[in-house]
Length: 217
Image 1: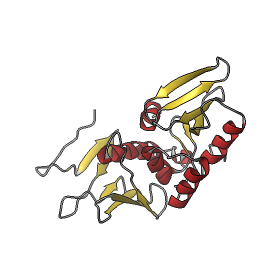
Image 2: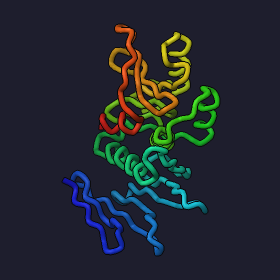
Image 3: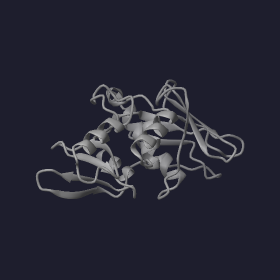
Image 4: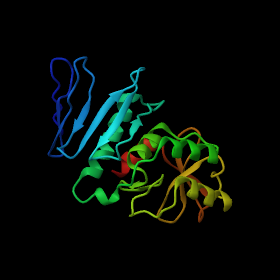
């Protein structure tokens, strides 16, 4: 079990995670400014004027572009950051770097939303900004996919299943496929579901994108 040790200021300077020591330096006003898992794997946290956190990757996740973390409307900023940390820890494990794609830009994400006529789930945005299309126990398609995934983007997959007339696809977007080739979709409420071609049934898979990914990690 992880041993979380907070200091008298309520800060978590070090967090043992699966045998790995993860450090969290803070600035003079108590804001977390880094996540350190080694000299080559550091996430730098900056803040904009409204105190929205910005991640600048250094070595471990994505590239050097600033990445806004979008708080989930259901879960809040801290939980959204915790989710990204869990995914980063998985992809940082030895041998798992091959599963990681390259982070998407704000323009790529906004362009995809406009083209598909949808609003992406905030945790999905955070995921593809940091990791692109990656395998995290399940394939998550976005942009700039890992070479372990096919090259299709979320736009490509969604367009494919919409053209095929797949039930539910028109008002949703496709982020993955199950073992039978059925699309895994997110609807406007943020729920993850699929339509099984063989049975003709719509099946709920998770209440949220975050739940879907965490169940696979």
